[in-house]
Amino acid sequence: MGKRVLILGSTGSIGRSALEVAAALRDEVTIVGLAGRKSWRLLGEQARRFNVGHVAIAEERWFDDLRRECPAGTRVWAGAEGLVELVATCEADFVLAAIVGAAGLPATLAAVQRGIDVGLANKESLVIAGALLMPLAAQTGARLIPVDSEHSAIYQALGAGRREDVLRVHLTASGGPFRDWPPERIARATLREALNHPTWSMGPKVTIDSATMMNKALEVIEARWLFDLRPEQINVLIHPESIVHSLVEFCDGSLIAQLGTPDMRTPIQYALTCPRRVPGIARTLDWAQVRALHFEPASRERFPALELGYEAARRGGTSGAVLNAANEAAVERFQAGRIPFGRVVEVTRLVFERQRVVPHPTLEELLAHDAWARQEVARCTER
Image (tube, rainbow, N blue to C red; front, side):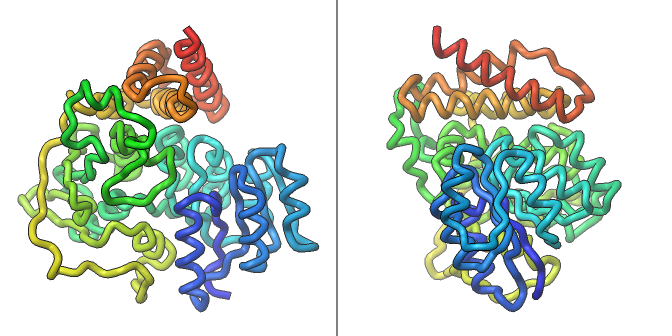
């Protein structure tokens, strides 16, 4: 059968790319389970295409529609508990966690609890619950393999030296569509402008996070947990070409970088096959077209979300959960036309500063802080 893979978030951009990779690696990979958030029709279509017998949907109201759409005999679950049941039932060797936001966290924890290797395409899992996930993975032997292009690059580059010899890591960022805009113009950006990413093709929420640079703020927190780094060991560089996906700097001054085209299918495939490398479907880098690579420090004046990421990494505890939830709720209101773009980070900061951090939270406390932050955003924006 090859590696038995469960994809949590198969209807999103990462999940769809993962299915393309799986189809190309059919001798290496077998899809045994699929889960989505609400796109029940596409989820049923995927279940038929890959002959999958185990399917779940995060939003319970679509359960009956999904069940009718799936082939006869398919086991169907719904809700957060349903996603956990899916992990426990479908006998996967590898779980790709790609459901955006906090919705996929319990299922990710369940996979790690069972000792299953997890490809983390959902940065929120570590942002929210890094203090729970990392010790649990160490206990059960589950490997946490990053799928974010930046963290995948660091994961690969770390093989060039010892962990104790790492001086710092450099997360690269395209700068999004507003890299050269003054702050006052960014504040007035429209939804269409925020979704116009110059290099990457991603879902709308992640694309808006790229425009505010909140995605990089969350990646700072993710890197802090995944690679056991202090916040001051994590630097953010603007790199508009999106060819150098990140760098690791060692104590002897050596910098090891991972380069490639801006195509998420490459880090997805590496997570599925590592440490082996096999021919892939992503286009390779054409050096005849590469004339220059540019780097510059990330401006925290233009992108104040970055400082929130560093502060959450310093505080730890429930602060990552609050930051992530407040941002998710603010982005939803921007997409709905209820607040302007300039208010997204502003509202997120207001809620972040009101929190009372629990240093060593349980999962229940993390989810409670997540819910509190969303309620606070609603109060702020209603007023």
